[in-house]
Image (cartoon, rainbow, N blue to C red):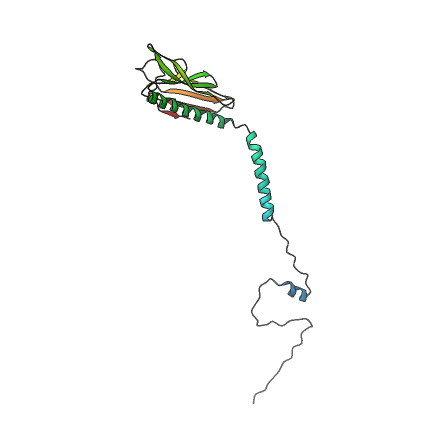
Length: 198
């Protein structure tokens, strides 16, 4: 015969017995915390909202747009002068080939040059028309190493004839600089090709 024995365990009030129910997440809901007598969890938000971020980016963009035009960007002015000069040299060469006349880039001053079309008068080429008159940006100056009176000339075949001795052709170098120390060199070869060296 078997004996059934029952055991009574006395627990202090408020003690809960472990249950065999599946475990829940460590986070409890506000209702459960209130039932247990714990204060509700207050979630605080940190960081910026999307509207605040968009507002700050827009304000920063407006401030930058207002400030950038007033900055003195001297190297970019020198770059701009070099690009303009290269375009004018290529224009002069193309014009010489197209019109069958000599065209030169003539140095008028340290900050100014002209693209001139020349015409044959007797045995020499003289000024026919000024095609372009260019003033460099403020603070930018230029000079070139020719022995033909400060101009770069192209003949009717588009060849550079800036040096007096045609049997001793050299590349012509033109230098651009500014008061901030930025400098560039442009080379024009006897074939008429022009490149920015540095």
